[in-house]
Length: 251
Image 1 (cartoon, one colour):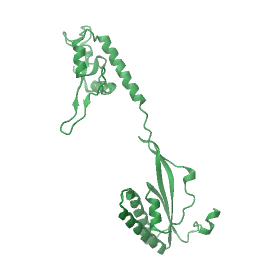
Image 2: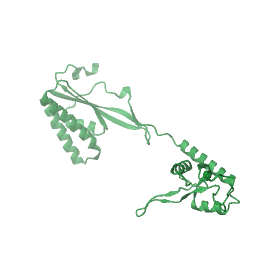
Image 3: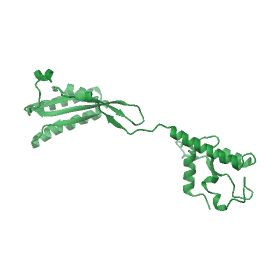
Image 4: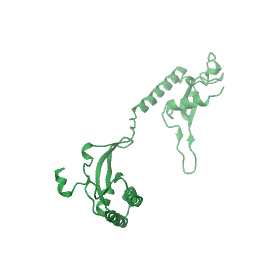
């Protein structure tokens, strides 16, 4: 009976795609012109052939292709152990196989576990009060270094107000998404567009408030990194939650 696909997968998995003797990779990467090349062999420790290397007539034929009798080697060392079977005995090859699989397991265990990506927030970084924003330039400068936004707006908007407020928030998010790739002229156009929209909001009885919260991105492959998020609120100018500028120092 031939080596089963499952046995092959277990052998290659436990061997880590490495020769048990020289520990060289057994799959050569593809080139621009050719596919990958497999340079490893699934070698029998005890041959099933009567005249084969290390043949043992006491071993049942159905055990010849079992995982315990297989060793993963490069083609150079495959030929070496079979040509020099007096030196590379059954006991020696079994020790080589065992030591190699333990080495692979240790190496994999030593790889630092990649933690899931998460955002960490800090209480003292969360804005308690959002300053009023008067110009598109001020808002763009805040938003351009951010990776996302928390958006808030007044309740009970009319259909026209939904379009005005929702359109502004959507456009602002779009600017945030592409700000890092924009040329200087595009940034000037963006600030002008945002400025026009702020004036339109003011004309319709809304005020714009915004601030940046500093968060931290953790996990993944790289180390912790800064993650800035824009808090932006579009509130009716009659909303009782608005704190007059003169009273801000008392908060």
